[in-house]
Length: 437
Image (tube, rainbow, N blue to C red; front, side, top):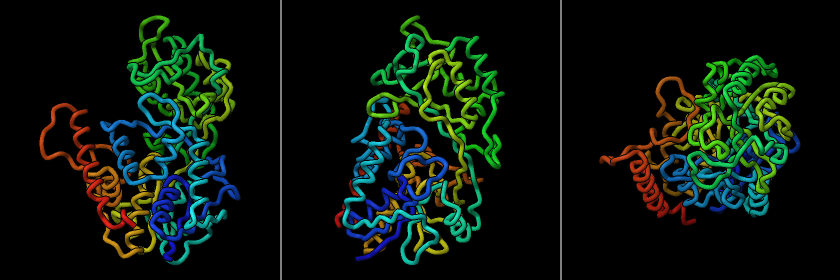
């Protein structure tokens, strides 16, 4: 039986291991937790979600919704676990993070083709290897990666939002609703009037930040911008970002508020909620002080404060091919956020592609070669050479998927048509032998 080593059991590594194992390939899956934990991790489970518990939109008119649909069609472990541990979040797919990670872990632990090694990987072994150690790789493996990839010293900083208990939220100052009444009323909305908002922003921009070595405002990826950094960009920046009141009618007044902070369910029981878009690297004391200025959170119990950590990613267009293989040593592949894909679903999708294509190579079968008409293929092609200018992390979006060859009226209709085309192609690709072993 052929063996592939997978380093790291995050979303990408777990999905990759599953795709290999289900095709009869023996997998040696290395995971350093719980023997050694990164600054952002708390759980011993695989596939731990360290930031939001949302996997974003589940609609086919959204590119990440399409990517999820493609993954479901190809028997994704991550998507199966997400669907089984879904919590209410309007039109988004959010999960009970502990149940989600536990199911991933237990599924891989039970698989006869998966050998789990709960130790820190100190070197890159011989043979077929997938490196999915993530942007918070331990120093030992990071040094080995740096030796392989002289252009890998690119970085950005990622931030994590705080979580509060629902029963500590003052519901006399908040209301349940989803924006534009879309889906069910799953979000707790915490309004602020103009005076409250201006006072909040004033304290936020001057609050004390926790030291993060090498951090500066210009080094943060836009998709995880700390709330205090956004506030420094202008007094109304938050009102056009995570605190926008548009589409949220306060049932007490029948109108929109000046600003609104949203809370999203973080577990299946609905007892804890994360503060949407409030990634931060303020000190914990300052988080308690400043965020308690939000009227509904004046007595909030914080069960997790926001943290800031360094994320490193590869200069993938120079280093990797469309299969996420290292051009200079094709026996080594990378998967996950380290490659420059941004987002939970994108990370898992990269692991899926690597697992499927590595299985095809190891078994001597035809490559799938996911095309640019598919979301999973477009992401791999962008990462391996489709970017323009300085390479930056990328979420899946319709802009990198091959456009239609005919006009469709209306953006949503066009996106739906692209999604239908993509899913039809995925069904055709599933006729290839690697999907039948």
